[in-house]
Length: 309
Image 1: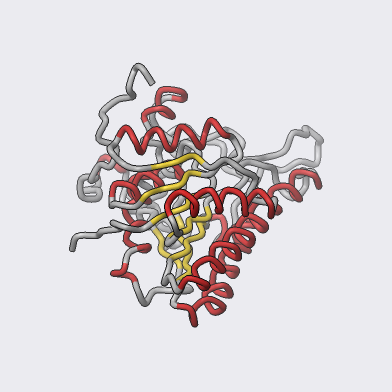
Image 2: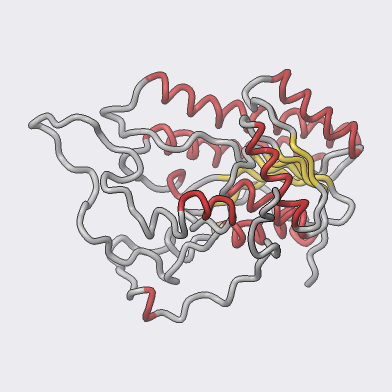
């Protein structure tokens, strides 16, 4: 089966250096022209530059996904340049945070607003664009394992990712009459494979270098405090030995956006090495003793960063 997105135009929000950049690169490698959005103009440009180093066609369209006028502006930029939009990937989100006892109202509100308005505005405006032109498009929202099960230390992230999951199902019902599909995709803690990100922070991800207090956690040292996470040696967590990389995510999202998935809507696609499926009492064998998945099919073929870039 040869997946082809030739002739399609994609918009990826939150195209920062890890998951967003990986998805944008994958869509381009499968043939789409890709507009890379991020609040940080440098991040949007870096994602577009990575695509072009790999032979694809891309543009940077920075902007705030929570501002209706800015969303209209960058959508218009894409349409003016390439004529239409067939694929939208809502990846923009605010990471980090703390647990429910310690999170600030300001951070909670901001994190929820980025996810809520980012998904809503982009889906609404791109959905209207598709419906008006008879485009049977694909919209994908990026969820998280934190949206499906509890995890200490990230109360805002858990809240808004859980909201994403039902937003997708409701939006899928709204847009189904127009032939527009809306799905979510759930990764969990992928290990970075973007050469730029690896050069900045080194190889490996959060499973290789777990934060001592978890993703978030408390700042206080009051006598009544109780630990929310195990702080000792991490037991094996993933049945297949790895949660994969943004390249794994990119392959799957590209397929979900292709015509091979033409009847898939209102669904969630999970790529996490079996992490979500396992029972809490199941401790997989060490990764070194597992067969592991098939070899990764690479998407970034540049080998290393262009030293002149």
